[in-house]
Image (cartoon, rainbow, N blue to C red; front, side, top):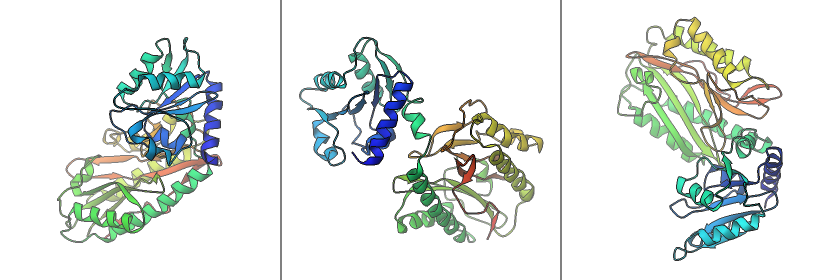
Length: 365
């Protein structure tokens, strides 16, 4: 196992000790990628990584064993279609060394329900919970290597964003702008994670699906885009306009930008996530647009584009060094335009550090 994975496994076992956890069970997910750099084919055949305080091994379909073996040296307990997974799972549980009498088990919340029930049926006396205080705890605190990968991904995204705005011209469609951005990712060794291009009134839909709308003078332009390179994604929203700004644009842009700044200033270790949401929301509410801020202030980002911590009005998650999340307040004016500004930040040296180096000023074309 490479040094990074060995260190993560050691940290996981420390968390297991701290939380009195006997067994962690992970399905084919980003959790498995984080712990073992392995993402085996996910279908109806049960595949799991089981980690105890002294052992780690895989329940692995024989069909996938040879391919998966190229990525990990952890032991496999293989099973064939003709025999089913039960006997191999029993052998794997025995190998973990845990007691079958009332073990404390953490289960991957993203695992298929039939996989989870297979495991729980084999441990009928187990108490169980999800990964928030074990694997989730570790993943929400990024190390230096992850910081470097996230920084590189976001700097690349700055270029993709600039390419999108540079493509604006009379009559171009949202889809055509998205194609320019996707080509930038591909040409620079990245893959497209998502691209939302919103012209005019479409920006008032927070999750607008990029379509055939053509750009015309006076349209606001909202670009929310992200790519993925070297295993880590990016995410950013920037605003612009074509020809001239729609009525009220400068006022709304200023309010949303001040909300971003207020949230950034509130970020520090020891603060609850809901305080960041409140800092942004208070600015927008004071300006009279509270009902037009339709969503939470942010979400965590790491291997997944959306992961813990979540920056909501009710989240009591205590922020800590190394946590990465978005700050993305918005105001959505139906029939006119929507305006959202998004930064991905990491708590570093006691404050919020923005990954992007692209200003939040409006881009005119």
